[in-house]
Amino acid sequence: MTKLILGSRNKKKLREMLDLLGDLGLDLSDLSPYPHAPEVAETAGTFLGNATLKAVTLAPALSAWVVGEDSGLVVPALGGEPGVDSALYAGTHGDDAGNNAKLLAELAKLPPGTDRGAYYVSTAVLADPTGKVVATAEGRCHGVIGDALRGAGGFGYDPLFLVPEYDKTFGELPPEVKQRMSHRAKAFAQLRPALERING
Image 1: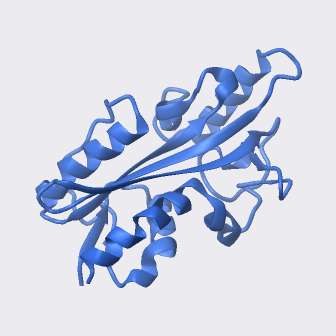
Image 2: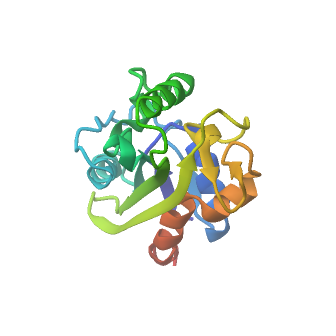
Image 3: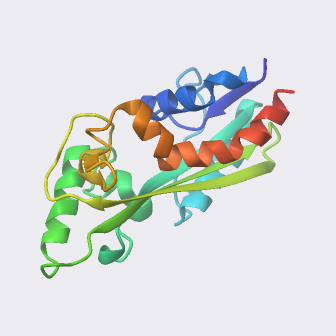
């Protein structure tokens, strides 16, 4: 069974990957079993750059296939913020409450009637055990930023990310509905053919 490692210690990302790719027969894990895996600084300035850094650094270090993934929220009315800094928008990495509060505060400064459209981006890069990139993918999911937190599901900006066709946020939608349409689901769907080949 081919081992595939998600270049992250985010258990919620791992859970999504298991749900999306668990049927492929790969040995899936995140970095938790590898305490000595190098820390990869996300310094590239783009989602693709950061995902590539993770994949090409971690794969040879672990002698395994690695998916580097970088994702975030883009709000065009805010000039693309929070963008690649989505996880540390408010200053502390992974402070979901702080990040959501800052997003609402920044939007509140804009003129009434400003378009609150937004989209999630997920970029995934697959590297072989030598660190060579063999596939890249990008998924996007479009929505609108609500004016208050709704729902306790998901993570990150999900309680603010309103999906118009359901009139619910990602924080309110059942996980199986979110996974059908999410940015990460779309990116991993694009990677599936490459992943099927490595397990052949």
